[in-house]
Structure formats: C-alpha cells, structure tokens
Length: 174
Image 1 (cartoon, helix red, strand yellow):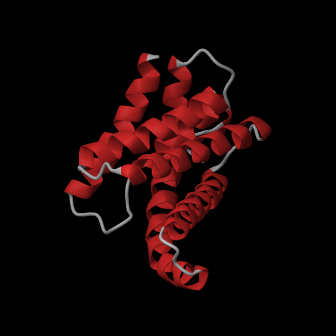
Image 2 (spheres, rainbow, N blue to C red; image 1 turned 30 degrees about the vertical axis):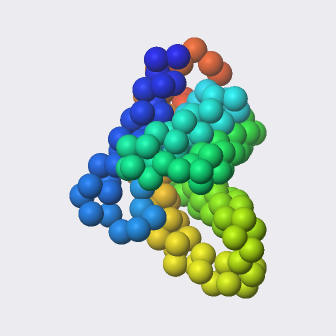
Image 3 (cartoon, rainbow, N blue to C red; image 1 turned 45 degrees about the vertical axis):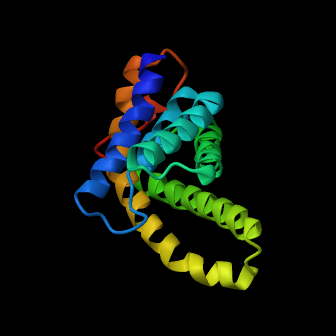
C-alpha cells in the first residue's frame, strides 16, 4: 500500500516539477508511472493509481475543479488499459512501450475531449481541430518520458510488489 500511494504521489510531483522547469503546455510526467504501475500491479491498482496520480497532480498544480473528476477517471482508464495490455503481453521493448504510450495518450485525449466538448455543446469538428495541438504536445511528452523511464520504473516496482508482473521481461537496456 505504501508503494501504491508513493507511486501516485511521485507521479504527481514529477508532473509538477516538469511544469516548474518550464515545460510546454500538455507536457507532464504522469504516464510513465501510470503505465508502469498498471503493468506491474494489475487492473484495479492500475486504475486507482492513474486516478489518484491525476487528482494529486491537479491539486498540486492548483488546478483542481469539477473537471478533475473526469481527467482523473480518464487517467484511471489509462492505468486499467496498461494493466490489461501488460497481462496479455509478457515481453516489452522500448519501441513497444512508446507505441503503447501513444495509444493510451490518444485514449486519454479522446475521452477528455468528448467529455468536455459534450458538456459545453462544442461541435465535434471544432473539438477535433482544437484537440490537434494539445494531442501533439501530449504525445511528444508521454512517448518520450515512457520510452526513457517506464522500463526502469517497472523493474523498480517489481522489486517492491508481491504480484505477478511483467517487470522481469523488460530490460532497461532495450
């Protein structure tokens, strides 16, 4: 449990630090933690970790509001998906982690775009055009951070969690 909460807090603090050093909009460091924790701990913990990491990040940044519920649930879904894919595939290289990070980033962006767009009755074509720069930045940041850090995080988490995991199948050198 300590590792679970610690991972969520670490993800949020990492995101805040990245913003503090001047990262462009939509570049944050949550995805490597959420991806790694889902792959190691399984679907339930992957969902809760994603939800908690995003909620804490919004809180630390001073951005918490009604939207935090939706963005947190969307990141929880990302953690759940990472766990399901992680259970189905046992060996990961950095390229595959990058592709998974890209796919889950798009899942997150589509979910949040639809929730907010529908809430404010924004036409779908306007939503899609407005989403493009957001998603480009989000993809660049998430894929880069995941390719660099996820293998190390998976191996570190595997040492602390007593669950069946894929950590032994990821090599930081790949």
